[in-house]
Every structure is written in structure tokens, then in C-alpha cells.
Amino acid sequence: MEKGKLKVRKSLSGVIKAGRKEYDIPRFYNLAPREKYNQADCEFELDGGTVVRVLVGGQELPKDDAALQEQEAKEQRREAREEVEEKRKEQEASFRNDSFKLANAQVPADTREVAVTFDEFDNFALKLNRFAFFDSEDKDGKFKFFQRDRRKGNFEIQAHFGNVPFGAIAERSQLLAVSLCGEGNTIQAAFTPEWRLIVGLGGASVYETSMTLHHVYGIPYIPGSAVKGVVRSWYYTKHCLAQAEKEGKPAEAIAFKDPLFCDLFGCPAEAVLSSAGGSRETYKSHYEEARIGNILFFDAFPIEQPQIEVDIINPHYPADKDPVDFNQPVPVPFLTVAGAAFQFVAGLRPGSQLSVERQRELLAEAGLLLREALQSRGIGAKTAVGYGYMNP
Image (cartoon, rainbow, N blue to C red; front, side):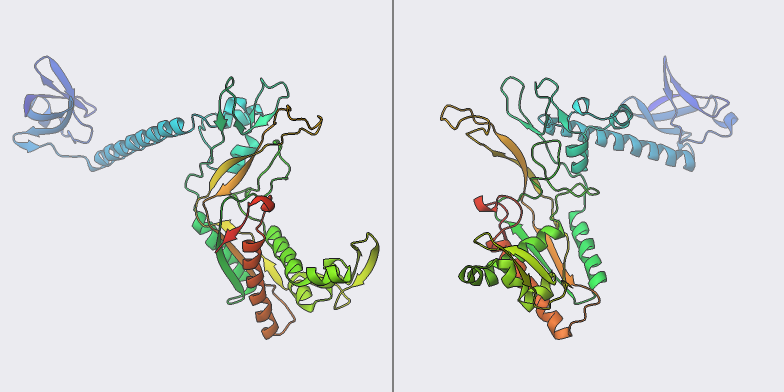
């Protein structure tokens, strides 16, 4: 323990004089009444040059609980700032080759001022589509999320989802489906891509390619319309294609005559369809009236954090040039999803006039078709070359 003399100011703050040195008395000590402690001999303990403990007459100075709490809160805030700064430095190292550069984003000035403090966005949709990297040095002035260039450098957009609760989002979607359709009137199943998944490749985008991302959560998901579309298409293949080829009719014409198809997906009263020979004919549905489907297909959300990976379309023969062997390939990058299971949910439409037995039959058939479609046909773009196939 060091020895010194207390000097207490009228504001009840003070210092300890030890020879030629002075040390601040911690603010969490209560130095009232001033007359009791001013010029009193003391012993004190240092930690890194800072006084941490003071004794007068062998007893530690009384502490001010409110000041002590403020001191502890201040220390916690300091530690939190240091933790944030350390995390920021780690992120900077991991984002070194990220295409996200606020200075290169074509955004309004007031938006830039608000966002200037951000080194990273947890919302990947915001980062990808609203703060897109614009290469001003490119003669074509293109937006880019990926580049491999020995002169300009390499970068690849990184998806950092922060603390997005993927499992909770999928569970909430499932609970909403149950609340709409009723308890026991839904089916749920998780499927994982065998390799990679592409959804929304041809959507509107500042890039040449796009990706479907939830506008609120910023995470990849599969819209319910896409799920219904692939299941409906699989029904044609499984139940209608062979007969359609045999009779020379479109597969839809065969499907519209099937009451199971009409009850599952709905159908028009009649439709004008083109046959294999090119002629157009009018075909009536089974019910000869417009029907809506009794099965609802909901958006499929990832139940764990996915990986966003860049892939390449590499056309060797550009469309504006003759197809010769010395043409330079023009790679076109696009984004894929990998490494995450998706929660698929389907349910009975409320207010159905069908019998309970028929509803149960439709729900079971929808579950079977969904599993077969995802495993045998895949979902999303480029299923012909292996993308989008999923397993339970």
C-alpha cells in the first residue's frame, strides 16, 4: 500500500498527494463531510497508475452507491465499445474483398450521410440491391457484386446476416399458416439442397442476374407461388404427360379433366390451349366452372443460416459475334444459396366445401407431390444442370 495525504475540494472530489505526485480519488467514494477527510493521512492501492482503494485510519472510505453504479455502468459501456471496435476490426479483415463500398454506391446524398457510419449491413437485400457497387472506371458503367481482374483487383459480395433468427422466422411462418388453416390442417417438411439453389435469377435487378430476397429480413426464401408452380408442373409429368402424348393433347387439357387436379390447384371453366401440332382448341374442365384450389402453398424460409455463393455462366460464343473458337468467353456471375434447410408449409384453404375425408386426401396428396417434385424435378432456375434438387 502507498501512503499519502487527502486533499478534498469543496465539490467533494479530491486527490491524494504522495510526495510530488498526485492521484485522483475515485468518484465512487463519498468524501462528505469534507472537514473529516481533508488533509487526512491515508493509505491507497494503485492498479496501473490508477487509485482503486483508499483507507483512512485503517478503514476504507465510505462508498457512494449511486456513484459506484455510475462507475460500473461507465466501465460496462467502455467494455461494450471496445467489444464493438474489436468486432469491427475483425469484420474489416473479413470484408477486405467485399464488393460493398459505400463510396461506390449510387445513392442520394442524404442517404449516404445516414449510412456513412455503417461498415456492414445485416440486411443482405439492402446491401445487394440498394447499395450496389458501381464501377465508375468501367467504360460501360456497370453495377457489380463480383469481379476477377488482375488489374482492378478481385472482390466478391459477402452476405453477413448478423443476428437474424432464421429458425424463429421459419417457425413464425409455420404458426401463421396453422392459425389461417386450422390445427391439423397443414403439413410441414424441411428440405435441404443437394448442391445449390437458384431462386429469382431472371428478376428485375441493376445487375444482369438477380436473386429473390425477403424485403424485410433480407434473407433468401422460396415464394409460395414458386412452390405451387413446381408441384403443379410435377403433377402434369406424373399423371398427365403420357396420356397427353398418346392423345396428342396438351398436358393441361388432361389435367383439367381430372377432379383431383382441380381440387388441388383449381381450374378454369374452359381454356384455349395449343396442341402438339400447333392448332388451338377449347377444352372444358371437369367441373365446367371455374374453381379455386383447396391447397395453399406458403413461402419456404431457411431454418438455419444459408451460404450465399457466387457461380458463373460462361458463354463461349457471345450473341453479337460469330461462333468461332477464338472468341473470348464473357463470364456472367450469379448468386446461389447453399448449406441450409428450408421449411416448406402447405395447408387447406379455409372455407372449403369439400368433405373432411376429401380434404385429408388432398392434404396427403399435396405432401406426396411436394416431396416428389423437390427430389425429382428440383425448384428454381437451372434444374436441368443440377441446381435446385432437394432432399428431406
